[in-house]
Image (cartoon, rainbow, N blue to C red):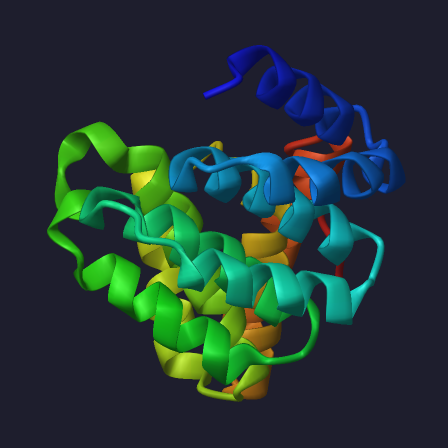
Length: 195
């Protein structure tokens, strides 16, 4: 496996140079005989294509990713990449099925994978909210918050919690979460509003 090339691709992705990643990985995928290496390129291609709103490119990469023979412990990574892309392209049911599969997987129940469990719970909550299954969405979002209260999806979780609570007619709770969110964004714990 060419770790140096993979590191370069991942650095470009992290810098937001998505077009460059897509341009480079096509040839790398075709040239590689190693399924693990191909998987890493494909996952980067999926992330970049999703960020560029290139649904067909992302979809082709997802299909190619599932054609690879990967060890079972990598199934959650493959599923998460596909699920996040599906959710971005308005396919919450497909995303939900993959996220549920991940969360049922014993690997993510291991305490060493807390970050991945958090990400999958948050994304599952988002998918459920898009499917208008608000009570289930709240449960998943609240569990994600319990796993990591300071995770990368913190603001999105609060926004979805507000949406779900309001959709369920629980307006006082929605207002309370929104107020908490506003306090976190502004850094002012004394934020309040009166109606």
